[in-house]
Length: 497
Ligand SMILES: *[C@@H]1O[C@H](CO)[C@@H](O)[C@H](O)[C@H]1NC(C)=O
Ligand SMILES: *[C@@H]1O[C@H](CO)[C@@H](O)[C@H](O)[C@H]1NC(C)=O
Ligand SMILES: *[C@@H]1O[C@H](CO)[C@@H](O)[C@H](O)[C@H]1NC(C)=O
Ligand SMILES: *[C@@H]1O[C@H](CO)[C@@H](O)[C@H](O)[C@H]1NC(C)=O
Ligand SMILES: *[C@@H]1O[C@H](CO)[C@@H](O)[C@H](O)[C@H]1NC(C)=O
Image (cartoon, rainbow, N blue to C red; front, side, top):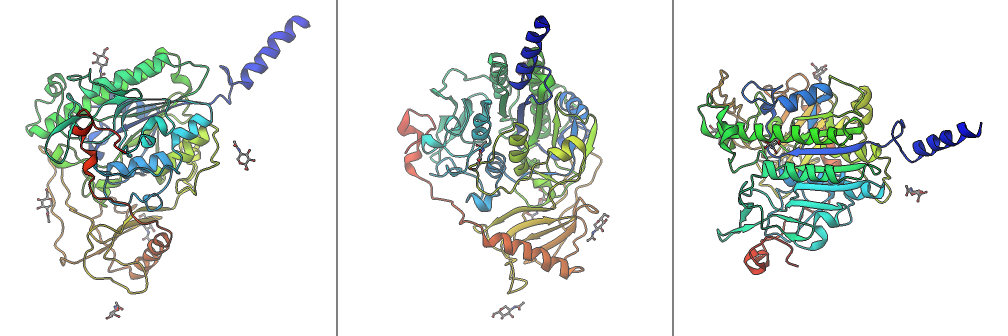
């Protein structure tokens, strides 16, 4: 009797502290964010670029086919880290420029803060782009135990440099101990993969792991080791060919990382999310066909993103999820999975989507504010005087319907160079047109503007924008600060206040 009792007690204790075999054991969470990765540029959406690793991970897990991000970098990253719309953080307008004294507000706890509070080991590798003018804004002061990566955006892949407004290039690569000068010539697709693998290998498995790998790939400049480009010799267009190679390098990197998780014995208890930050940019080789428009726009090509969930802890294998999910939803979804607390957060705009991802239940979201940008150029004249001003750049989704107001940017349909599909220019409309309405479910490529046919629906959706706008905070977009010049601090981008 006594002999049996002890091991039993030990087993009970093990499951209580989350030892192996426990159903309630909290999963490791790995979030891989690609940069400027187009909707058409993953193997299972397109026909030109090979992504065997991403395809396999996605088909072993849940493909998110009604998944939305923001049209550009900082906005998506801010919503991922806080679960809150930009109208609530002041980051409605454009991206953080490296010379601006601005950042993700410090009173918004990040996903990493919440994971750390819940007892996770928290690590970040790659692109931050959420502010750095004061030390308090750096990733290791925003919940990450460790950080290796860059703070700004648009650097070179080998030199890890970014230009200042005077045209000089300065190093933007660091870890929590300071600038890293030793990686010149190390392609970031390899470097960041290796650093993420170092995190996995050094991880103490008694703690759950939260790893955020924000690749530089596949943002411009177009740079990749020749061997990745070589397999795309058949693509004539040089930008597209190099870009395709960059995607392949990233695909290989994700393969290496998942192998490391398997080798370490972590994969079976891991939830891996893969997401783009926004649509691709055709000038930079990316492509979102058949969607309309591209990065930066409020058309679907800017915001309808590539995303999937994989890993041993995803119960639904090989499914396609068509429920409305947004990048702000990851905050409550993943903090919930970590059994963390939402105490101390401000009201969230994201909703917990683990139900739809793990069991296929309906999305908890029917309304999605794409953005309201009070500082963008206005367009035309207001349609109505008693509701949301249609000259303002904004978009909202309510159920099937999407309303765009103001200046949405170029809305052509651009197929990848060399494909059999035809380029379609934007339809000719009167120049000051500033309202569009689409049924995205019926018309995901936004060919049939319903705004004239359905004025009642236009008014209803303007009412949504009006109500959102009533509790928006002012947009923060300060002038460039000369003190940000890295020449004043050893030629390295970093905090200056
Ligand atoms: C993946 O691992 C292989 C084998 O170690 C290596 O040759 C390759 O460069 C790695 N790729 C990336 C993107 O890190
Ligand atoms: C969250 O706050 C409530 C109310 O203050 C408190 O009772 C609860 O213990 C807190 N939970 C955590 C996990 O901190
Ligand atoms: C809006 O108000 C202006 C000025 O009061 C008026 O001239 C205009 O006709 C109104 N427009 C509509 C659509 O009611
Ligand atoms: C929109 O983009 C397409 C493709 O680059 C280009 O041909 C077209 O001229 C642009 N339209 C406008 C109005 O700028
Ligand atoms: C939008 O399209 C879907 C799918 O075709 C349809 O079920 C729905 O009724 C449409 N909604 C409206 C408001 O037209």
